[in-house]
Length: 156
Image 1 (cartoon, one colour):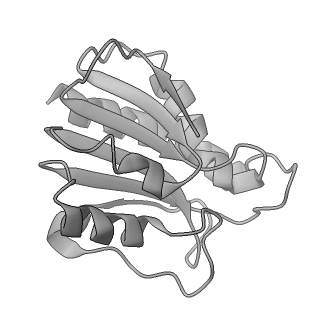
Image 2 (cartoon, rainbow, N blue to C red; image 1 turned 90 degrees about the vertical axis):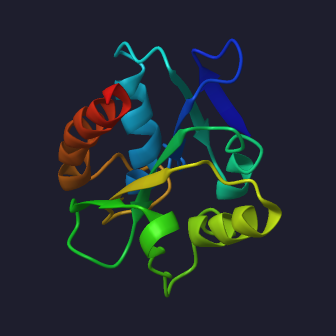
């Protein structure tokens, strides 16, 4: 399932927030997209998805897709910018809260010819993914920085 803002047809940029806002730091992607919804980014379609596989039908024909997600394994709150079409993505050792992870969705998109021209991932390292928990303070602090960096990338 996905939610979309500002979509009257295909746009050259896709901003996608992955995650569940009702599972603590897994809500990082949706929180960043909510912040971006308040900015004027006319070329960008904004969506929130629960599963990375939901992105496969949204990527084709895009000049740029930026995916925002929570990650696990490093210092909580650390914000990382990755370009998986150039450098790949780290493979998580734990299970994804999304089922098939983002790296697998990218691999499938590559195999099926469904990737955008350019793909960027912003990931914040999470701490607490408990049901009903809010964003942890460190991850909440990364929301504004991520939104500002993404807006700058969209503008050029």
